[in-house]
Amino acid sequence: MSLSPKLGPIGPAQIPSLVGESEAFKCLLFRLDEVAPTGATVLLLGETGTGKGLIAREIHRRSRQRAGRFVSVNCAAIPATLLESELFGHERGAFTDARATQMGRLELAQNGTLFLDEVGELALESQSKLLRFLHDGEFERLGSLQTVRVTARVIAATNRQLDEEVHHGRFRRDLFFRLNVFPVSVAPLRDRRADIPILVRQFVHRIGARYGRLVDVPPEVMKALERHDWPGNVRELDNVLERAVILCRDGVLRLDHLELGGPREAASDLLEDVERTHILKVMAKVSWRIEGDGGAAHRLGLKASTLRSLMRRLHIHRPASPAMPHPMPAAAL
Image (cartoon, rainbow, N blue to C red; front, side, top):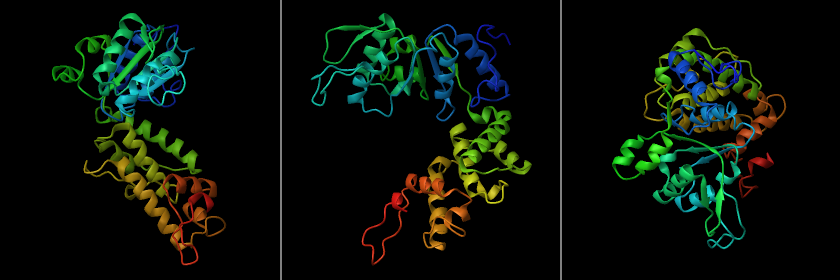
């Protein structure tokens, strides 16, 4: 593999969260090494949960734009009516709630990188303005006639087949060609099974450190993890392992800690329910006492502060009693 001598090799030692040794992963590293220093527009293609955002950050980190900001926009998470303002900014009075002039994400990415996640969700009107920026490097804020010029690299990602979106009239053909300068396919986890043991060890170490636990993964458990198809990819693996570490009491991960069923429900959807149910059972046994010997934190093998944090995240409240007409908020526990 020929890697850029100026940027140095891309390897696990330098990319703590981007690791692997499969052929698919090595091919990805080679593609990143080719494109990172060029400043070219990159289109990341792959299923949900494959780590496209992480890869975009790594391209930025190894690029000539690394001194600038990495600005991320999730095009699927922002309503279409607000997305244009988020991207290009607006002037005061441009619409009802525009009480002040605001720069858009593109301006914030000046001399840096703009990452457009789920770019296939862009409305056609926003697609037109993005196309103009990619072509001319300029745009106008909403409510303004003044042209703004910005120099920023664009990395886009999608789990859709954009050529099909073009065929059905939902995505502009000319924008597709502008974004597709350097396409990079990100393999699903089932096609890079050799990377699963490396990812498992990394995730278990990171999750264990977060919860103050040292956890071992026996060979039979690792084999089961390698055999699973992981429809939710790396994100699902991370979620499954977090739940398993939470349920682990003796420092050894077991198969009964894992939810490795079929695709009837993604593990990410089950994680919070499993955590909540388990914590509620323990809290009921100790009469909602968190600290001290025999308290819930002690039984769960967690710090009291960590347990309180979990309870807030999972919206766990102490149940009402006759003397307490309203549930006590988790923060007060």
